[in-house]
Image (spheres, rainbow over the protein chains, first blue to last red):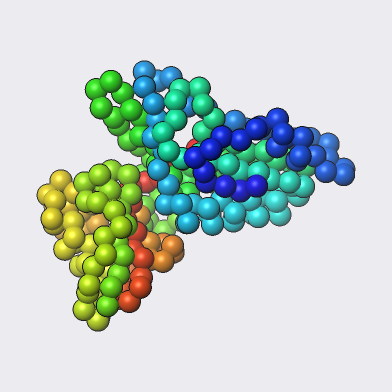
Length: 140
Length: 92
């Protein structure tokens, strides 16, 4: 399941469904809205493009790390502290591939998928700064 | 002909989103964004530097594909195109 969506998912069910014949490791990355003195977090995406890029990252990770299964669910909309923000579930034959595949996916998301976060506070809000190293002024 | 311009995150707050514009044939990407951004000085300053060039961190897309800033002045927009301009991403 690759998705950009407002609704939460049942991480336990997805984790169980990730197991395939020959699976030796399932790694779950669950990104959570952290309490950095915020009231809520607003997540915005360029949805069509973000979904296509997540699908490409999943394909690349599957090929590169011989993954048996990949789920990526990035939530959008307004979320409270403690809510699930990003869920990545990967299954592989061995732990090395599972850990490496999971790490690859989160780093690729942070590097280029068009999603933004705004931390809402009592005094207003602030956009979480992204990595300025990948603008269109520089080749990737 | 009509094109759709989409800004995201801070740029959206300053300049709006899903802007439909009638443009002449032969209109180039960079001048089109300059024209729209000039409607709000703060929005313009967020995207362009003091020389009127795109700030290096700005990300440009045409129909979901990235366009380099160096190519934006010579990239023609066509009827039905979706143009996107946004700040560095911060998902995850």
